[in-house]
Structure formats: C-alpha cells, structure tokens
Length: 296
Ligand SMILES: NC(=O)c1ccc[n+]([C@@H]2O[C@H](COP(=O)([O-])OP(=O)(O)OC[C@H]3O[C@@H](n4cnc5c(N)ncnc54)[C@H](OP(=O)(O)O)[C@@H]3O)[C@@H](O)[C@H]2O)c1
Image (cartoon, rainbow, N blue to C red; front, side, top):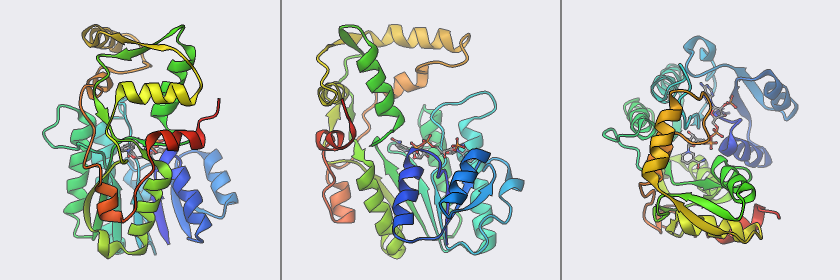
C-alpha cells in the first residue's frame, strides 16, 4: 500500500486520480473532515492528521511500503512556518517511516533548494532533503521547477491578473527571470516510473519541462491561450518589494509576499533535457500544455 501526505493539494489530487486508475491501494493523510469523507467514497484509506503533530500520525505508516511526501507551504502564516512544516514535519514522517519499515521514501523538494539560500522556503526544503537522505531508507527526491496544470496556484493567480487588469498586464521587474514549467501529466509519468522501479531512481532528480521561458514569455503565452490581448507593463521591482515589506507588517493576507517577489528575480531552471535523460521521454512544451487545460 502507498501512503501519501499532501494528497489534497494540486499535485496530490492529480496523483491520486492517476494511482487509483492504475489500481493502487492508497492511504492518505488528510486534515479536513470534508475531504476525508470524499476520499473514503473513492475507496481511499484515510488518516486524519497533521505532519507537524507527531501524535496524529503515529502508526499511520503500518503496512506501508512506499511513502509519497508532498506536503509543503509557499508562505508562512503565524505559527505555520517553513521550519515547522518542511523540517519538523518531514522529521516526524521520516521517524514514523523508520519505525514501520517503509521500503522507499519519495520527497517532493523544489528546484534551487539550498541550505545556504536566503529564501526560507528553499533553505528548509534542502533541510528536509537532508533528513530524508540521513534516514537510511532508500529514497527519491524530486526538485521540480513550476508544475502547471488544472489548477496550480501559479497559473490560477496569473490568469486572474491577466483577466482583471485593465488594458495592461503588470509584470514585476523586467520579467526576464527564467522558469522551466513542467506539465502535471509529465510529472506524474516520472513519479509512476519511480513507483514501479524505485531501485532505478534513487537520489535527487531535477525536474523541468523542455524550455527555459522568461516570465514575460510565460505571461504572453498564457494571455494568448486565454485569447486576451493586452500589453505587458513592467513595474519597478524595488517599489513593489518596498510595498510588500511594509504591507506584511499590517495586512494579514497579501497577494504576494516580499520573499515571493525576490523569488521572481532568481532563475528557476535546470538542464532542458533533465526529464528525457533520466526518465526516457520528452515532456510537453508550455504552450501545448496550456492548450490542454486553459479554456477561454
Ligand atoms: N506546484 C508547484 O509548482 C511546485 C513546484 C516545486 C515544488 N512543489 C512542491 O510540491 C509539493 C506539492 O505542491 P502543490 O502545488 O500540490 O501544493 P498545494 O496545492 O499547496 O498542496 C499542499 C499540500 O500539503 C498539505 N499540507 C500543508 N500543511 C500540512 C500539514 N501541516 N500537515 C499535513 N498536510 C499539510 C495540504 O493539505 P490541506 O489540503 O489540508 O491544506 C496539501 O495537501 C509541495 O511540497 C511544494 O512545495 C510544488
């Protein structure tokens, strides 16, 4: 049986559909009662719990061979910090896995994860990777760039901006930062390969689509897919960061945080052939992927 933590998110929900289609038996960690009910109806075993609260996941991995750990946050809110969710949460799950004899542990990190990063998100992703590596359980870590599909948070937010902005589409900074979006269907193909032959995929894998695209190119392609004609207006990054830094002190929920703006200044790319080299197929390009799920 496979255990999934983070099954209710964007990546997780696509993954469970694919795994159920293949006839896998699943046990998922779920926080809300409503989701627990809908998972039960799909024939999924449910553990109600939170990876930051070790008591709630005690015994959750009994009879589990393969753990898929997708839990992550992109923004800290009060006591829900990167340290607590990424580092402490991973420690809790790995401890359980060690006690119950899990055979393989999959962890979803992020491209550019680095212990020395200024970004709390990337620093704690790297710390979580180290916890997984040190566990002595055979492991696979994916470090993806942007994963796109119906409905990832990034595309959803960008579509709202494209739709709502009058006449122009505001882009933070010069828009030249590069990304390497990978379509969710291709990410799933990679994961299924790991699942069927975990011994062939042990270690850390950078995961990205076949193109390096600037933020400007991403915005233009998305607007085109939505059949919306608007020009791009570059907003001075310094001013936006100042605004975000000030607003963070006063407004509890922000459209974008200071750190997220800083992340938009750092390329998020790997080898264009990374998926083809390691997983033996060419992933879909950005425009083609958009044409599969963006409706006007
Ligand atoms: N999407 C991307 O482009 C991308 C790129 C690189 C890396 N990643 C990584 O891939 C993973 C999945 O991404 P996603 O886009 O699917 O994220 P998502 O939609 O935000 O889903 C996050 C998942 O984590 C769960 N979660 C959060 N805190 C938890 C906690 N304390 N205990 C248990 N579950 C908790 C959420 O459960 P609830 O439903 O209960 O909130 C949800 O199932 C994340 O680790 C993310 O950092 C994503």
